[in-house]
Length: 356
Image (cartoon, rainbow, N blue to C red; front, side, top):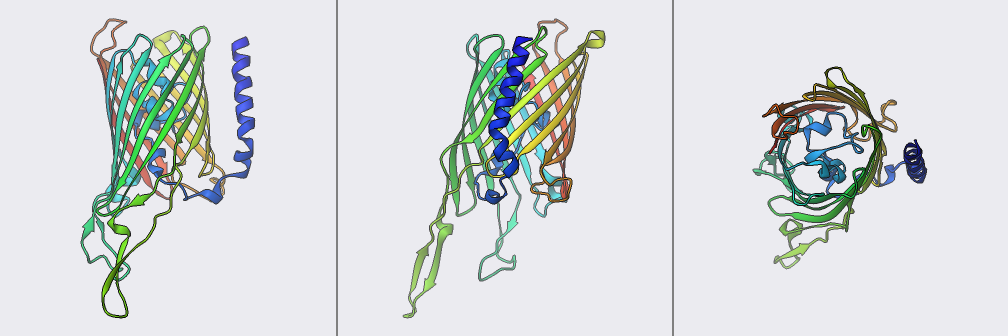
């Protein structure tokens, strides 16, 4: 009981610290950050309830939501996830897809090392210029890549923490930009059956980034008819830093190993409106899970939409063990999720995780 009171006290203090930001909003800075793809969750499992599982995320998904949960990898995990963003080719003229590949390995008794790479491509886009605004000059294919290296450690049976070092790279045919950021997170688990969980994570903290390349050069002609080249300077952009505070509670039932988890999360964004997320997950026989969530932003219900990443999301998972032994960790998990993206078309994601 004392531990529960302490957790709620910490939540109240952190919420109060973020209250000024939550009340004022961050609309004045919206659109001024770089590397916004760092805010895109590439993992199908946690996307199914809006990333609300900051307090109870486990495995490779944790490297995005809260790296502290990476500490629960038992031996080796390999995961792949594919996301069709905003309807893909049916939703955007060129299509957009996100692919993520992750690997987690227990390297110490209490420590896990993880790495994942996320790539994002937009298909072939038409080339337009100031002199030729019509798309008649061919196509180009921009791409994003994020490389993440993480380490998570279990300090005790109840306290887990970790850190992620990430490199973001954005490239076109003649312009590119790179940025470096750090994530950090901690989880606290308590209760007779570890049913109460609290988590906090700081994401995308790092120096500013800017673009460079030949695309910033412009060839002009002077009064004497001779060509000369002018190079424009790119402005620096800050990274989309955010703070996540989450709480989760498991209701456990002996019959058929049923579990109902209620989770809540508050996200304080430095360059977007703050998010409030509520989610539910139902588990059966330690093999099947169904989950849903709702992401709320200020102004959403009044029609003042600031981002498409809000509203209802849902998904499910199937865990397939390769052995009937209770202590066996070898198996396969298949995940699927869907997220609404008004006024765009919805986002679908499917993933698979192998445990060795």
